[in-house]
Image (cartoon, rainbow, N blue to C red; front, top):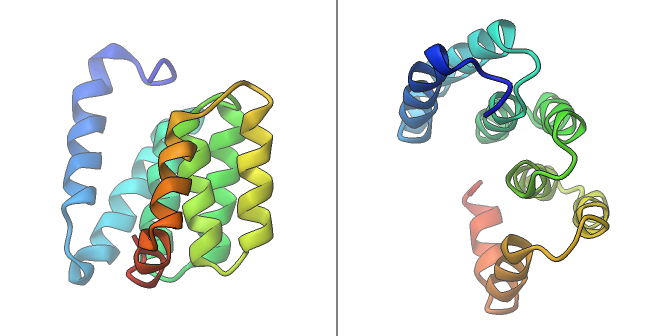
Length: 134
C-alpha cells in the first residue's frame, strides 16, 4: 500500500472491504467506487487489482484484464496482484495467459499463494471457483 498515502489508507481499505462484501446487484456501485479510487490513486497496484476483480465479477473481462495488468506492472513482485490477475484471466477463459502470469511471478521466487491455488485446483476447487466468478 506504499502507493497510497497514510492519511487515505483507512478510507481506501474501507472502500475495498465494502466492495468485497457487495452483492452482485451492487456491482455497478462497487465498480464506480473502485474507478473513483483508480482516478485518485492511479499508481496504487492494490486499487487496480480490486478494480480488476470487480470488473471481472461484472463480466467486463477485457477491462478487468487491463487493470490487472496495470497492477502487476506497478508492483511486479506482488503475489496478491499476480494471483488476482491469474483469476481474472482464468475467468475470462484466457487460461494460457493465466499460467504465463504465474510463471512470470516465479522469477521472483516461490509463491505460497500459487502453491495453495494449484493444490486447490488439483482438488477440483479452482474449476468450481471459476464457475462462480470467484
